[in-house]
Length: 202
Image (cartoon, rainbow, N blue to C red; front, side):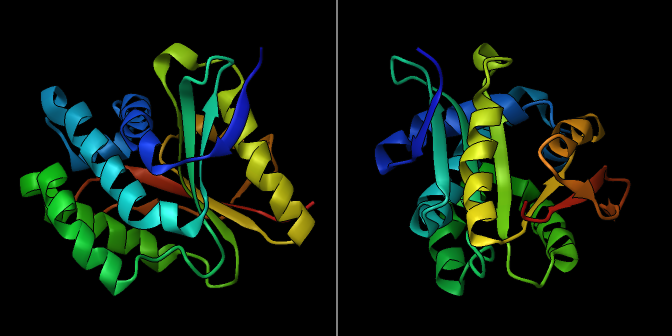
């Protein structure tokens, strides 16, 4: 039946957040922000749900990859040019949910966000904030389908795409889609290295 990509809807938030929490449970940056292994997946699901509900859905860049039965196996959270930053209003209304997700680690999360923000490109681009595939769907072409869905639009509109890879071993995968590492972002206080990657339109 194959994998298809469609825009995410409000009804998808719970399943989408669960898939991303599964995908990012062993991510070095998320493990740095949320070191408690036992509670990490649940907290990540709350965090992704808040980000989707209060920011990504309104920008029109949240997409899910589904199998032939409509089951979500992967998701990508894109922000359109000029919309990658949360507005003051979005930050205010999402704060309670973000606090519930991060708890005592909320200041660590804020510090990481500030470091990534300083390294962010200032020229117009589509920003791939998050992409992930659930464990049961890995190797099934979900990531490829999600990337191509938005990158095709980037090429049509002649707009670059940008992401941060928090796993060095994922860099060759993104290279295959035209992304190139542009530097290194050091997370303070012994945090992991993050690799900014930019893709020019083809």
